[in-house]
Image (cartoon, rainbow, N blue to C red):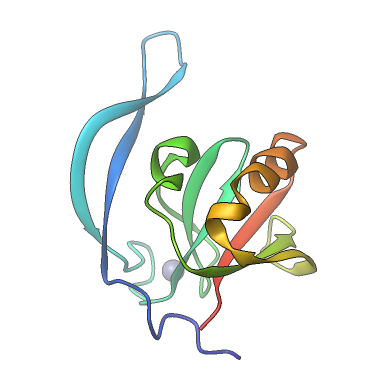
Length: 125
Ligand SMILES: [Zn+2]
């Protein structure tokens, strides 16, 4: 354990999330590749979190938010074994909710995050 990032892709395609004039969050149809590096502290230590329908990269070093997109738009591209960990806003681990093939955990993730939980999608390597 503790091997965060070893097998993680360096780049990921994502749909940018924007907001319209009334402040409603909308996925924008723009695919681009982002580098998984923190724009705040420069650490190569971003990992993925889900909260209320958003898929957010957060820096495990400085705890700040990186790029975000809608979980719905990216969930079909996820694959492999993941651990679903409920965390506090400061990313302190609370408990592991589920471990398994991510495709089978999508409904669980949507259910848990719709209740306001912040969930760390930690790839099992
Ligand atoms: Zn950082």
